[in-house]
Every structure is written in structure tokens, then in C-alpha cells.
Image (cartoon, helix red, strand yellow):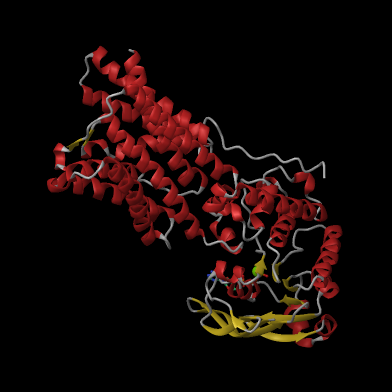
Length: 251
Length: 291
Ligand SMILES: Nc1ncnc2c1ncn2[C@@H]1O[C@H](COP(=O)(O)OP(=O)(O)OP(=O)(O)O)[C@@H](O)[C@H]1O
Ligand SMILES: [Mg+2]
């Protein structure tokens, strides 16, 4: 479904990614691990249209993704979270959720002023979805508070909720477990599997190997901008190169 | 005295429309438009030029309402990939460019002498029209503010990368906002022309943009009723300084400059002590617990 082929990215003279490739199949959960600064977030940013690679291809469903166009990539059904949560800080949790829903008639001037019925109907449907998702994320009691007042872990969960409102086919998650308490991580793992069972594909960047092992079908290992290994979580844990470059590293 | 009160209310209503226009741009969307006077001037000049050219009154009005949003799009298009600092400079420059052109090319609209418009003789009618326009502008502002569009505009204001990540093109939204708000400001300018009966470059100064900004910052960016109250306070302050000039015997341009200093002071005090304005932006509270 998602194909990244030989992507290279340079920041000035610094080579952040060197011919990195990966694929994510339909209904697959794929992990991406590697030391700090190895280029994981950079790779997600290339896929999501934030950085334009120096060379390489990125395709979704066999068609190239618009390089460097964040909105263009999103419109193709790709949703992503950021390592540092991005939210509309001064808006309520509920409004953040509502903004996540795509194709809203009420954002078009014509419909907003001339078709109030259509707008109200769409709002109602989105409200019901937002309530259901907030419930699942255990954030419903915060619905009317501003997003900026949530704790770090809650903000991570909310960005996930906003993403789900957009109903993407494929999700890129940058460290969804960092700063989230272990009980919630277990809930997240169950949640991600549920999303997969709904037919979505997921690419997760994560340092928490336990989470990676319990949720991923396959894992890629990035080291200094190059893919050095790929396999099942068990294979990766047993791989000497990986142990040397990453797992063996004191945390 | 009554006739003065009617005139003051008319002027308050006109500048309130300007404040709502800027509120949608800056308060909701985060657009730093330092050329807010430009669409107002375009509206007024369209009427003036129309009269000089001998076209029917409604055609002049229509021309103003169409020209202002078009010019707005032309002005902001070069700023599409730039930050809001650039946006501020380009709108400021465009406003001044227009005024200086009108000043220095007398063949367009009389240069410094300006154009005389057959002014609305009936002051009550003028007030009625101004209040009517304000009501329409307020309803439009509220519909945007309370609806899905306003929500997305605020997301763009807070974090445009987030908006793009949600599949929205922030520039497309800025263009929508510009079309609506510049037409709104043009309508205010058209009415201003008919109320005052005379249009000259001195009516459209950077300081007038400054007045509208002060109204928005004072009243509460993001809150339509707040910026209307902000505009009312400042216009009342303005007209009362005019009385003060007569009463104190100070030269009128000194008093005019003092008025600007007072506006500046209002801005500084608001930034320091109450950046959310007198009437802060509200948040919709939803009843979600019942479900
Ligand atoms: N916009 C940028 N400009 C310059 N250098 C950058 C930029 N973004 C990333 N880098 C550099 O590229 C390298 C890879 O960064 P990246 O954020 O992709 O790492 P990461 O694998 O996500 O690390 P972490 O696990 O700490 O999040 C780092 O050395 C970083 O300093
Ligand atoms: Mg990272």
C-alpha cells in the first residue's frame, strides 16, 4: 500500500537519510526503530509531505504522493501524528476533535450561509463520532477544557483522536507511547489492533520495544539514515547488528 | 446635539463594520492586515470615480463591492508562502500605494482635492443604513465565528501545519476570508463616502487602520461583540477629543496627535495587562456528559 523507495534527504551537508526504503502493506502494522537522530521522524516527514527528498520515490496505492505538499498527502487518506503533539492549543478538546473531520460543508461559504440544514446535519454526525472516540481515549471528561491545558500524555492521546476523526486509510505515528503511562499503552496497543482490524495500515516510530513487539507485524531498523535490518519483532530482537547499534545501547 | 448624536452613531456603526472585518481576519484567522483601510478606500473611491464618470449610483457601489475583494486577492497572493511579518508589510504597502496614487494622479479622482459625492441628506436614513449594514456584518461574523469555518480558521491561526496535516490548504481559507472581509470593509467605505459626501486621500490614512486595530485589540480579538464595543469606545474618544480641542483652545492638529498617542497607550496597556481584550474570545461549551 505504502512504498518508500531509496529516499535520501540532506540538511545542508548532513545526510539524514541514505537510500532508505520500506513498505507497509494493507492492514499491516509496521514498526520503525533506531537510535536517537537516526532519521525516523525525518522519514515520516518525507512521507507526509513536510520534507522534499533529494532523491527517491514515495507511493501510496501505486500512485506517487505529492512531495512537499502536506495537505495534498493528507487528502490522499494519510494521517499522521507528530513526535511533539500538535494541537490548536487555545481551542477546546472537543473543537480540536471536530476540526479533524474532513470534507465539512460548514467550511464552505456557500453551504455555511445557504444550506444551514446540511451544515447542522454534518455537525451532528461528527459530534457523535467525536464523543465516541473521546470516550475510547478516556478524554470525554476533558471535552470542554482547552487542549493546551491537557497533560503531555493526554495531548498525545488527543492527537490520536483528532487523527481518527479524519478517518485515514494509513496512519503514521511518531512515538505514540512516549510519556504515556503503561496502562494506557496497553490500551493503545489494543486500540491500534482494532484500527488494523478495521482495515487501516499503520507505521509506528517507537523506542518502546515492548510495544513494538506486541503490536507490529514487521519492524524496520534505521541507523544513521540507513535501513540496516527488517523482519518480525522476534527476528529483530535476535539480530546482532541491531543489538550492537540500538538495543545494546544503554537506554 | 441630537443631530450630532445621530452622526456619531452612524460613524460608530461604520467603523464597527471595519472592526468586525478585521476581527475575522486577525482575531479568528491570525492574518496581520496592516492595510485594513485599503478595501474601505476602494469602496469609497469606486463611488467617487463612478460619479465623476457619470455611471448610475448602484453601478459605482457594485464596482466597489467587487473591486475590493479582487484587489485583496491580488495583494495577498504574493504573500502566500511568506510569514505574517511579510503579510503585514505587503498589506501596509498596498494601502499606502493606493492612497499615494490617488493623491498624485489627479486625473483619477481629483488628487488632493478629492471628489464630492451627493451626500445622503437625510441623517436618519444614513443612520438606518449604517446600523443595517452593521447588523448584516455582525450576523455574517457570528455565522463564521460559531460555525465549522470559524473553527478551522482558528486552527489555522493556532498552527497552520496542523491544518495542512488535516488536509486543509491554509491559503485557500485565507483567500475565502479575504474575499468576505474586504467586501465587508468596502461596504463600510461606500457608506462612509455617502455619509461624509466627500472623498480625499486624507480620509484613508494608516492611522485609520491603526484605529481599527486598536478597536480589535481593545475589544477582544476573536469576539465580534467585543470589537464592536472597542470601536464604539474609540470613536467616542475621538469625537470627544474634537470637543476638547474647541473647549481648551489647543491647536486641532496637536489634539489629533494626542488622540493617536492615547490609542497607542491603549494598545500598550492591553498588550501588557489584558491581551485577550475586554471581552475575550468565548468557547462553546458542549453537553457531552449526557451521552
Ligand atoms: N529540519 C532539520 N534541519 C536540520 N537537521 C535536521 C532537521 N530535521 C532533522 N535533522 C537532523 O536529522 C537527524 C535525524 O533526525 P530525526 O528527527 O529524523 O531523528 P529521529 O530518528 O526521529 O530521532 P529521535 O528518536 O530522537 O526522535 C538528526 O541528526 C537531526 O538533527
Ligand atoms: Mg523522532
